[in-house]
Image (tube, rainbow, N blue to C red; front, side, top):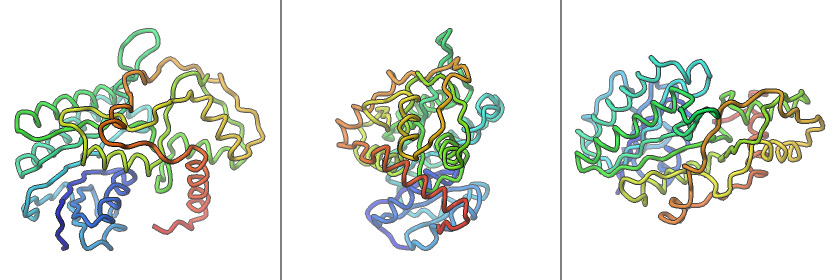
Length: 304
């Protein structure tokens, strides 16, 4: 195993953001300890001599022979399907799992923890300022507990608030992938009203944002990783239609929106000011890259 001036611990079990973040650090020559649920999820990183896979059911932290510089916690179950977003048992398990691992890492020795939160922490019903999902409540609860644990143990901490990350490498059925497929297949798109704010961030920008939070984030600050100027869902879908030459009408208003994300509570300006970060990938570039990835994926031509 190669050693380096920096050692990272990254816990991720959905393979998309975590794998991209691991690769970003590995390409810089840092040693990365990647904690995941199975060997299958990290096989593409084994070509790196500075990558050390750990598996959470039989985790042996004794192989880490020095203090971790930054521990990123990204893993979370039930963040996609509506039935999971409000599954109380599942979300409580997420809280316990997150706190358990972060406590273990702090006890092992760690300089900084970056916990990945979500814009769903500020998702509310339109008729009442009540959080609309157990997922968002669980993320906010965990964020506060992580901040407390880190403060009491003298460990630096940042909460990185993530929004809708998409792009090459994501094999899920999340919104952007679904919309691209439907447009490519010339299918009708029945949509929500589209007046709510909605920020979509390309994977490369999310990864660079997480890197900057870990390296340059001010202790105990929360940072939103996204754009300064956030458009509406309708504006983004309309541009996507133009980029992909989708000839059908976009059928907005077929579904009612009774919730919204309060982006006024997620301002990227502090991240830009404190670290020099900014989103660099244009929406057009991001959609073109993602559409090409999906075409290759659907033809089983993707090389990981």
